[in-house]
Length: 359
Image 1: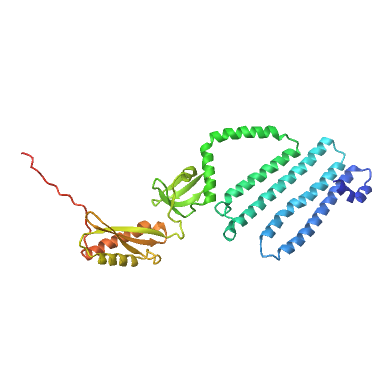
Image 2 (image 1 turned 60 degrees about the vertical axis):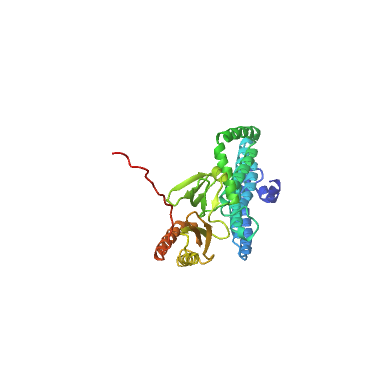
């Protein structure tokens, strides 16, 4: 502030011996100086950023102008307050207030900057090696960055006002231990949610099967729980701690979302197996829900106790079509086998009556 007052020495000399006008003059000069300088500099920077193809620099420039402009004002206003004939206590309070307001303005700006940078990294994850920050994990990192920036800002404000942080930190440690024991299940869900978002074993829209044979479509992945919609249109909420410790089968995972289904059928001994193979292949090829690539195939699996066991293997576009496709294929196989007089054997039991009850 002393260097700043040296530049205003001619103006201060005009009000020599009058502290109130000197303080007000410093504030007015600071306001004009900050307005002209910020307008001129940011005008040039805006012209330069308009020549680039990226919108990132334009957004960052718009965010940077308010805190820089206020920093210039705070320097001049603090110098003006020092010139005014106020009590030491009031002068300190005003200067501390200016600094606190500056910290808050910079905190808001940094929160916005961190959000923009994280969004840029997340949506550009497919074009670079940054795999941890993705659209699915963006809310997590956004909240963490906000928490860190706010925590640092609060610490700086406490330092400005001369508040001893030792007692606060000790109290926070004790409270943290108590909260940790009281909310251990919630914390387990939160940590599991972090690992799920970072590792992405499944994503929204995938069909997954849990250990308990619970199958559904993922509709929401949060820090506390994962939500599924079953085929019965029932929403199931599963805590992330259970998801993290369970075997999860992602039916939509792999190189593509296509899903293989198996139609198992047995025919009587003595049936022409080439005819069965041909019938099953034609049924699969004529079904619109069955994909052309990969091609369907038929496998003669085993000699059963009373039947020759076949499997028709074919693929569908996504697991959601499994039930409908199985219904159509099973119906077509049964009707076609009846037309061709191909017997589908089934277990039979003979009941022998040793003697009739006496009348």
